[in-house]
Length: 263
Image (cartoon, rainbow, N blue to C red; front, side, top):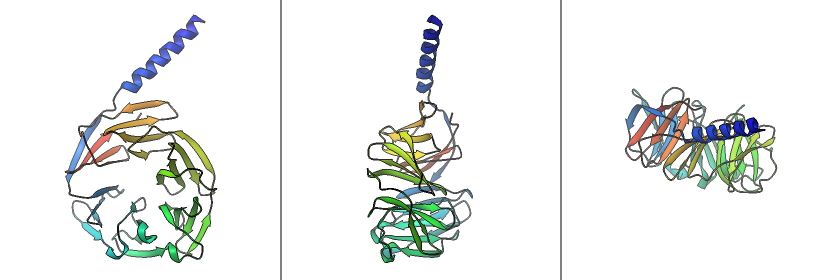
């Protein structure tokens, strides 16, 4: 019995110690850019940002831009597929799809759809489809922009969305009570757990995420029950992005990229 108690005590102590260890970062480069919002990098090392409601795509040798003043403010940019970039203009309930040269390839006005759709969340999905959260019925759907076909796949949400994120096969969201869920392309919903309160958050995978609170960054793994503060030099920042062990911090002066190894 004493051995069991000692083991539990050691495990609890080790867990507490490990959670107090900061994750170290190494600065890789800094990009001086004046922007209103930083979107992210794509896999071809282009970075995207918004300045004066214009989308910019740039690297060391090339710079492109797209603007469409007639549709108002850009509410969302999805660059998961750099060959099919999604721009969402929420005030006009409209999506624009761009190719890798930022040429317009598709325009969808959801207000003109045969089934009423009021989009409040959107992202690129597989097979020429878009993830849609329809605020009219509070359900997730998939919209085929080639066939102009919309299909509702989920049950109505009991709570409003605080944050959402998509990949080709999954729609993730966190509700206003910090409950974290996922929905696959067949409409199957899973409860992932509960997140801490956050100012901003980015989901890494089914159990891990990075979040900020009061200008401090944390990495958390719900499955392993680990939480670590991330050591960065910036005391204030506008946004952060994480991809392939690179943490990008967006400040008023530009973008600082860090190499980080998550547990």
